[in-house]
Image 1 (cartoon, helix red, strand yellow):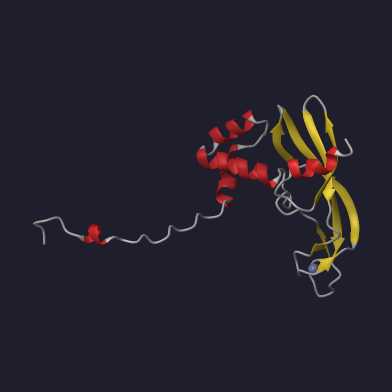
Image 2 (cartoon, rainbow, N blue to C red):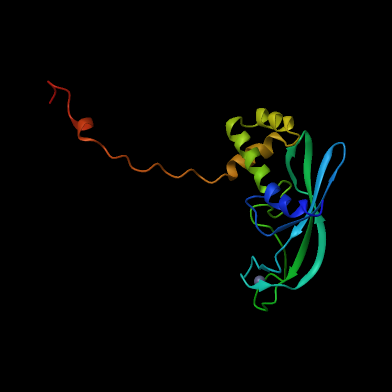
Length: 173
Ligand SMILES: [Zn+2]
């Protein structure tokens, strides 16, 4: 297991930097990935100042997509930091791992993306039902909210109109 763990980070979180996998536990229903942030500190979301002053630590359990027929959840050690900037209105903040967690998020960011895509394709009740197929319990209104939170699609690039498209059919002015 010891030489497997470093490789597991690349396997489990290929697009996330700053996460360290501590261990993996498997029971009949859940795969639990114990992990923590590997960053020494974080930028305060209030003022952008860097802080390494940890004042608290606790566990979060964001759910991830299933593996091998089992549901997956993280058991993520999360630290609260003090902002050292006296002019910042925000005295403390909780660390987030970019691409993995968000404030108050019940799911990993990639599971959220999957659920939002499901919602986009099958809005509301059908989306909630399909999410249940991959082991995620989510309400119809949550599915709809996730769709609303998706960024607006980029406006299509202006199309270059060819001369032929302007050409009038013969015989018309
Ligand atoms: Zn601050």
